[in-house]
Image 1: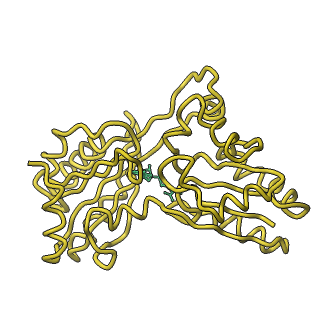
Image 2 (image 1 turned 90 degrees about the vertical axis):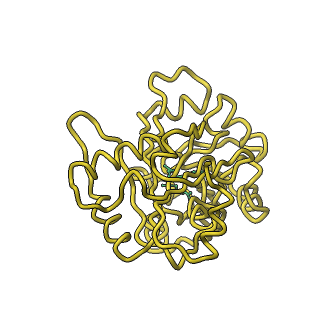
Length: 273
Ligand SMILES: C[S@@+](CC[C@H](N)C(=O)[O-])C[C@H]1O[C@@H](n2cnc3c(N)ncnc32)[C@H](O)[C@@H]1O
């Protein structure tokens, strides 16, 4: 059996009882660490906390292992129970459907155990799922690479009066991730896009494209460390949010479309000023 287990967004305690049972029953445990990272995954004792709770070793599966060595994981799962842990939900934003399809094609039983995900950002600020358009990703700009395909998507959403959830880039220079999790010296720490950087990039693209998709005055919701004890939600114009310090990662941003009166009332609770 291949168990694909969501770990949730907070810390090691957010695994469900069902998920923990699956881990305990498994002979091998992998943790996928490239679509998102938990705060405990970043600390030097991050992995050992998991290993202590599960009572067994945990293998960090970086992007290369998941994409290129999936066969190894699948062949192990064809012989015994294997747990593949995913921060958030296995099908939240970056999905693991490929692994599920391949396992099913090989006749391996698959059980997915869900958990909270970045998709909870949709409702946490009081906006309604029905009123969201396409989600976008904002990649880090470099001197020579400034991709802006998110612009048309946001523009379309805004024309329809819909909200846009923006997921912000995480850059992990592998193989630093494993060494980071194991508390060894890490030559290049992962880079997480902040709400601040995302808004600056969004405004830069608007200034170039001049399509009036949004402006400095557009209402947004900044969400930091969703699902953690110190989660922070703040709503205001892009300029208001640029003046705020949202603190430690992870961050995401919602560009607000037209609001229902109840959504408006909810947003008032998170107003910056
Ligand atoms: C690919 S998605 C995460 C997928 C993950 N499997 C899940 O279900 O949540 C990664 C992006 O979501 C956002 N994100 C993830 N966790 C977050 C959190 N706890 N608080 C705020 N944003 C978060 C960040 O913008 C991050 O770069």
